[in-house]
Amino acid sequence: MVIIQGKHHMDSWYRERLTNRELVLLSESGFTSDTLTYRVLQHFIQHSRSGPNTPYKILLMDNHGSHLTPQFVLLARANNIVPFTFPAHLTHCMQPLDVGVFQSYKHWHNKAIQCALESLDFEYTISSFLRDLPEIRHKTFKKTTIQHAFSTSGMWPINRRKVAEKMAKYMKEPASKASKEPTLPTLPITPRTTKEFRTKWSELQPKIVDQLSSPTQRKFDSVQRGLHRILDDSDMTQIEKDMIYSRLSEVVRKKPTSRRRVQKGGELTTEQAQEQIAAKEALERSKWAKRLERAKRIKANKERRERHQAGVHARRIERLRKAELRKALEDDIGLAHLTIPIPDPETQDIQEDTQETILEGFEAGDPKNWIQEEVPDVQEDQIDHSRDWLQDDFVPFEEEDSSSDESFESFGSIIV
Image (tube, rainbow, N blue to C red; front, side, top):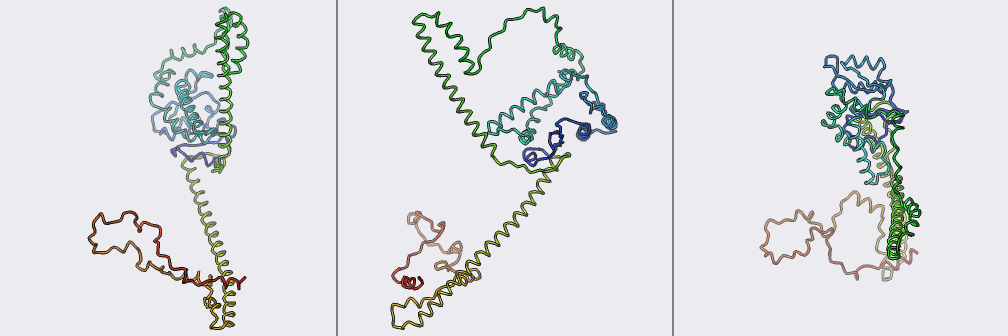
């Protein structure tokens, strides 16, 4: 169960790695409330298999006001659950989660963030957290870790001495006793940046120079020049790294992310969220398919209109050709090209669509059916393996003699 601050369940939360058992609750303020706590108790009853006829269970909690409401206590008692609240401000000493579990949880959570940064995921959002949550939970809530937490906190086996030791450890010492202890001199602060180092070095360098001999002074100057060169290189490297990270963060920021909403408010399990996401995606695919069919119809209508216009143009030219042919003499060799009819693109396209034409050279059908029953006896060394034409995209044929083709240049002059 996860409580998240927000008003809407987002699509990107339920996309990766969740196990369909998570329950996500929304809180506008980011804090728990009486209603949310009551729902958490119901979730606990369901997954702990509690009920009126089951063995009694004890539920350890802090003394938040939502844990003490009559509705919460009555529901717990009705399912044989005994709510036990810790004293105020002592959960860090007595609560097993605070003592021995949350430290491991924070460790694996930081590991997940580091892994995301190494993958250039600079924005570790709620989606990133829910993506890594199953792995963090698997590595944190191990049986040995939980047992160690209960033992260290003194909850089970019950050990009051461990609780007292932790209380003494975190107890503040009286002011009178602290004032009697001698104060230690403050240690100089170690510089952590190049700027801090240059400042400290400028204060220390004049004091060192006055105490050095000439040979030692020359060595000192050489070391100082090398040190400043290294510091300059370090500054340049840091500037370049900052520029690279700023550019990468800008790229990641502009990366498109899903901002679709699954549900407004309320609670939502992972299984319910994924069902709603699948239904929305199916609806979107259906709409997309309709848009695709409409685009295909528009394209087909456009091509049909273009063919019609080309056909009108071709038929007009064909009428001109026939008129010129009637005027020409039969023995006029220069007008022989007028005997060639002009094809109608519109009619030609219709014939191609309604009748399957067989190309020259492919009368035998599919090459896969050309296998003969009697295979001639050919030696292996006589076979040419340089190319297998059955695997080519096309079969090259011998080009016809272009001298037999009729010329259309003279007719082109008539059209112009």
